[in-house]
Image 1 (cartoon, helix red, strand yellow):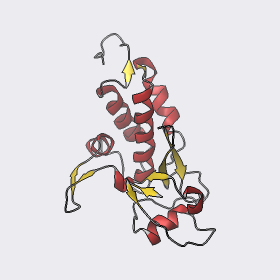
Image 2 (cartoon, helix red, strand yellow):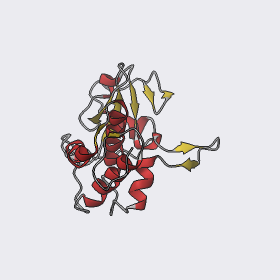
Image 3 (cartoon, rainbow, N blue to C red):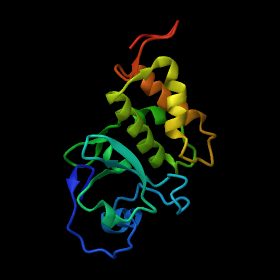
Image 4 (spheres, rainbow, N blue to C red):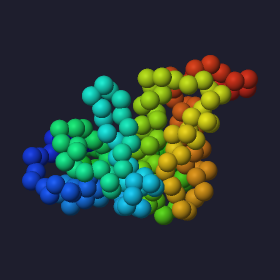
Length: 180
């Protein structure tokens, strides 16, 4: 499989190994978090890149690693740009917005929120929404992610702000708003 743009494997694994365990125990990518263990909270959400160029969020806690054999996935570790020494040189727009809005408290659910927001932004790059539908679009896209600390407002505000400030993600304009 490919993880964050790098080939991984082949690796011999147990048939029933979940992707979350594979990431943490075999690949040493520990940013993906175990939350509910049932695929409901999406703290463990990773991005599955489909062959058609689309992407979707999948719960790593209930998705078998073998199911993703030959596939391409992204984890929270794959969003920031890194220098030759591996040090982060630039955060993604979503990561920057989450920091600027102090969107998290304990940060346990943040990797899943980063991935869900990234999937949304990528979807909007292909199919922009009217500016007056941004709020509903953000709510629908982030609805599956559960946070027990913040009440969601800062996460949702950060995602909305990224969408509204990134040219090409919206179409049209509302009175008093800046056109994209």
